[in-house]
Length: 391
Image (cartoon, rainbow, N blue to C red; front, side):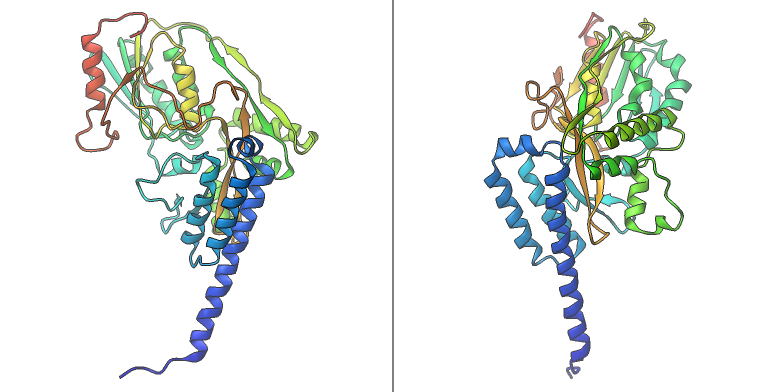
């Protein structure tokens, strides 16, 4: 026998769903406005793709929001809209049932997008493969793992420096923050590292987002999704040098004119005290998930006469960086927006191109996949090719 329909409950469900959909519409409208005001690459993308294409994508997103029923729906609508910018750093995310950030993409769709993805990664590991070769595996350059990587290189320093070969496995490393890889550079160094600087796009919202990296979060605030996610992106208290750098950048941003670009990283030529005799050869394993900060590391690494890159081209997500987090009106959807622009542009773009390996390895599995032969391939390659200035 069919149960009678409770009209009051049905009406309540309809009203609740209508309210949620209206909330997602506000999220989509806010995201479109935030990107237009704060994305460091917006004008470049407008010139490349055309205002009509960007406006059409925004209209499609607003229409799609009319049928959004869940937070996941809203995040997917936003990420579909963000594709018009051809910049994986521009993305929407939410916290999943485990409290981890997700962009709601399927495994085939997922790619490098923003530092928060690093929160799902594990700490770096290291082990000797033989008397000739040492392996360091680094799944993430997120600042939260910098202390672990610093401790790991300190612990194994003598072992690394008594072997001719060092393999650094970066497969799946979607990025993080440049200070995280500083302890690796001495092992690569053969000549001064040339770094092309970047400019930050100054707006009040961008300035507030930068300041949020160093603003303490109270215990009460941590109960909200926005604060839990912000905590993942915050600079650890022990990173005093990084915190001091951000404090200085925020101070300069406050004094600058909104809508202008401010130099926050000058071009540099960085010299280290010495060139280590060993390791004499450094092999870096990379794949298409290597993006953002990891690509910055690759740009520095390939300047070394010791280094050879193995694997697949990188993700191509580096021209616009220093992604900052914006909370959308619902408090459950978040927007990642790049706030800086590399001065390599427009002459030397990386986005949607990537960094090519010196030695390509086809059908390269991830370091945790069954049947992974990446490290073995590199070991055999090093055995077959005698040492030289550069492989």
